[in-house]
Image 1 (tube, rainbow, N blue to C red):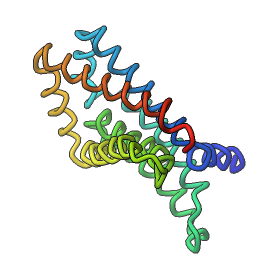
Image 2: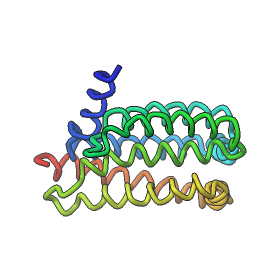
Image 3: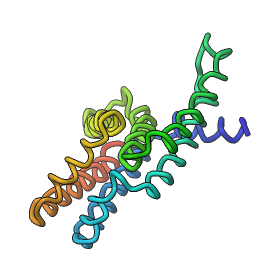
Image 4: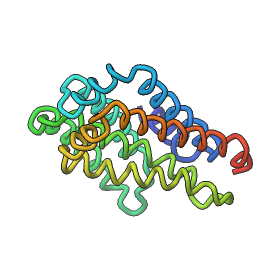
Length: 197
């Protein structure tokens, strides 16, 4: 099991180039915001239920748990390596406590955890790479990490943000178009400027 964890960790944190990370992030942003534009009404309804959604929260938290276990098992802890068992015990303990004891805003909390875990390898891929345009990707990662921290610690903030974005059809389309445009910019930079990084 450790070999599988180590190989996944190597791919995520050492095998991801800036170009690959940019292409993946750009395509995900484009796909999500395109769905929001094309299926505006059902997407708005689904998003409004997301912060308290137990079933989506459980699935997202399970994916986050697997990623967190990979990090806890394979991350280089240096001189603290002998204490790795503490991290490997803490991750399942937090997973179970979130799932059964603090599950009122499970959708919001689990999304915050997953966003942080996904942003970290992307940020690592962009770290100190030569093209200055990489700050688009780094800035996006830092924004999502900050949002993720709020969604975990103050989960009602996601509810409020979704409420603001879905208040009117025009505002929702403006937010979706902005996300789509940013995804196109990231993808264009990845294909044209980040090839050598």
